[in-house]
Length: 248
Image (cartoon, rainbow, N blue to C red; front, side, top):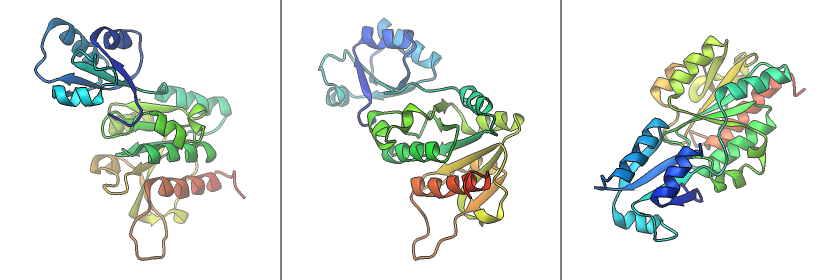
């Protein structure tokens, strides 16, 4: 379970959390349970496209704080997610071309929090993360964001590639951070733009990378071949801010 997620334990409590509209990042169900209440919970999870992990009773006992989990524990987001349309609306209300950060494979909550903080300081209108292979909005993320999570909306989407396709219809372009790209200073990073950042180890996945219009590299001098994801996000985001005319 993501560090410091809000834990909801017990069948009735989990079911009510789903039905009340609370955002559940992940559901843990004891492997082998197939009774009616569990099936009802699983139907709600499927309807909300929630990730479900079937685990052993021992694993649930280890996750549980109450020891009364009844075979099911939900990991709920500490903060509410926005919709992508909410982020675009925010840009329109400010009279600015949309500037979004899209994160691929960022599973470390400290990195996610740091990137949300950077997004806020660089003037991004919001952050987009995928449902799978991504850290959720836990208390650790909130702390690492140094308060930015209160001001910068984060949207969670089922498929980053599909989301990018839809945003392209809105006139957005996408630039991916990768050491094999063109130096960022040589690219036009103005206008409606999405900055795509991948994890330090795996980088941006192939399909997401292929969906980008540009690939930007950060000039470096040293023996190492890559930057921490949050540092790379910061360097690229502030170059975008500079090109948008906010930094002289």
